Amino acid sequence: MELQSSQRIPLSRSKCISCNVENTHVVVSASYAHIFWVPLFPYKKKLTIVCANCGMDTKPKEVSLEVKQMADQLKSSVRIPFYMFSGTGIIALLIGIFAVIGFMDDKKIEGYLDEPQVNDIYYLYDDEETSEYKFYLGKVIDVRADSVDIQPNTFHYNYKSTRLEPEDGFYGFYYTVHKSRFSELFDENVIRHVMRGFDSGAGFEREIEYTEEGLPDPEGK
Image (cartoon, rainbow, N blue to C red; front, side, top):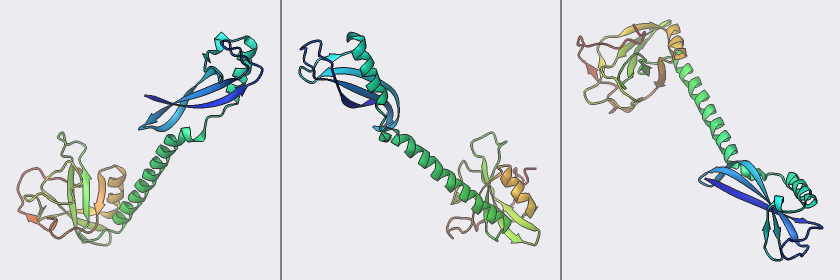
């Protein structure tokens, strides 16, 4: 769907072909794309010659060459109003805001990975998982000078859950991962998020007895 905006400019020395009165105007209409009537950008300008006396609308091809040339000059002088780009400006602003938020979130995660703490929850993404449940979790249980111990959880999720399912929890054993590996996993888009601090009733303190069913490995092995 398109919307229009128009400007009316007096056209001197031009008589109406209907009433022969010298009181005509050039009406320049601009059509623009929009989202919910918020203009995004104009994409064409249309010219009409209108008589202010009788209201006759005349197309440029129906008038003399001299009048058409004057009308075309006036059309070229009409600038598209700035507000007709307002939707594009709003979209660009939102993209910029989300980009800044994403950048700040990435920096926060990098800070958490550089300085891990006990009970940090790592959200890891298994790109080779064939189902939609590609997220699994790792909980930091010990931090040393150059390595971290991480407990894996038992369930996979299709979103970054902030609350475990009632049957889910963390196994009573752990993997030891060198700290330098975390930045690599983040760059490889395996670590997607780090949560620091969780509600006591969210299930992240729950331990599950070990079984021989496929265990997620933060190293992807």
